[in-house]
Amino acid sequence: MNTLKLLAAASVIFVMGCAQTPADESASVANAEGVVCTRSPEMGSRLDRRTCTTRAERAEAARITKEEVINRQRVDSVKDSMPMPSAGN
Image 1 (cartoon, one colour):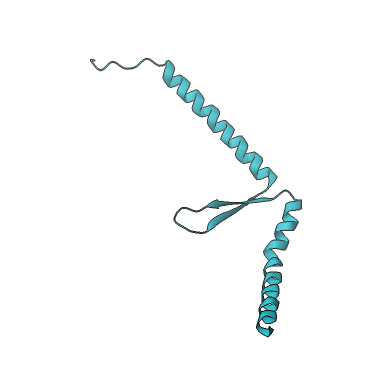
Image 2 (cartoon, rainbow, N blue to C red):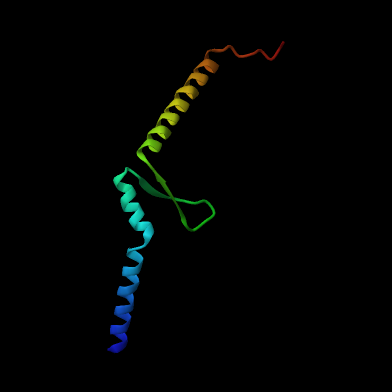
């Protein structure tokens, strides 16, 4: 019975210690400023990579991606309109 109480008390202390790390507090403050953190799989690792970005960074990334798509479509349409070189010359 005492072992069970000791184990329960130790697990409660462990969980409370993990829940209140400085990283969690800074993340909650940062979230008020529009920071969003995501986890994505890391190739060659069993651990995920955590990436945090602000609203401005996400907007800039979206703008750059949109420009790249438009430029790629423009290049592809120019290639399609060009005549193919003949192999006989």
